[in-house]
Length: 299
Image (cartoon, rainbow, N blue to C red; front, side, top):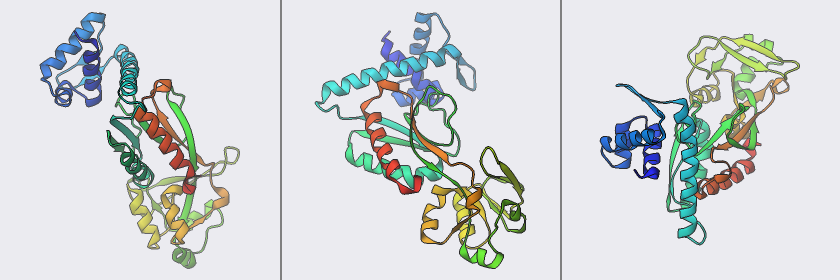
């Protein structure tokens, strides 16, 4: 058994969710992938994966082993890159994730610039409005908004954003400017929190925290549609400052209740490779950190 090939097969099964999909990615037959993973389990005398007719699940032992395999293969990739190029030019597939709108507005320009610099790197972007487990799903870099839970991930803080209540100048002229959160009951509300008929907006610091239940006239599952609605004069919405930074600069939206805003949320760039970071990850991190920190909408 080629141990490195077996490790690669095992990780590919985890990253793609099954033996058949792993085989397609590795361009071998499913039986080859099954054999390599089976031989790996037999050699160590442990079960790495639990197989059913519908899905494949990683065991606790398998999850810990997968993390070590990724570090080993990352070290090998780094060594090969350094050996084949005087400057260790980055190469290979790089996967990154962020929320949808943040990815569209701020990460995509960084990706475009990066790809223009490095011809031997391809990038897969996972722009999703859910928290992606970057270990389980094989993601190299994540950009996260909000406080981070305790984690083994390597995190670099690059900025912060505010929760902003805003409306169009035309709406505020017609309906007045709310002076306190309690006055929101007398205003039309646009909520981007989902399909619920009720939303809760938070205000104030930990010492003087206040939550206000609002009943939206319009609820939507996308921030873009909420922004369009309030720009057109429908009502007030609460969004993160980066999402409406352009509209606030241009004056098509105006922030209200600024004195009641909760503490800003931090923005972090995360990766899972520790000090064993590969060239492709390191060069992307360097560029992303520089560009995000210099962006005035995020600081």
